[in-house]
Image 1 (cartoon, rainbow, N blue to C red):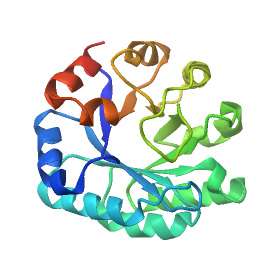
Image 2: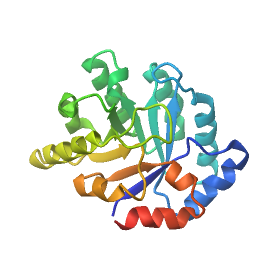
Image 3: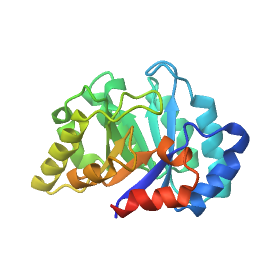
Length: 220
């Protein structure tokens, strides 16, 4: 069954703790933490997301799925390591070169955290094949990173299909995560092409019944 990582990017501060509790009761599989620094992407969520992640660690045993959309990657990795997230995912495009990609991924792994790598919609999936043997997770952005509520870019679906084929042919077990514009209408095609984890934000957070929405997303 497909897993759901609920993005808490647009959770209202005044209702945050109740929302986190309700998401756990609704059986989300992960809390997705969208960390943005105002440099790599325009929006800055750094302080808010750290506050949310810290609060979640105090009240829930559900795993954190941390997605770093930042320029100073090492600084943010060090900031989140003490929270013991399940995944820390960095952006390929934020690294100066491939050596830096390798070094940061290895650093995350040495701290007993599953490492992930993400690419923007405009980056070819073939560019990251060499990193796959050392990855726990590969995150395909299905919208431009930096803000919630966007529509899924159809061309990104082919990336997931191509990646799944490559993983199968090379006997690799990296999880594929899709992030952006995912809802009840398009979840089926994402599962069909090979996504294992879906990052869903607005579709769940704006719904009247989190549990029902998550069940609908998972049933396909």
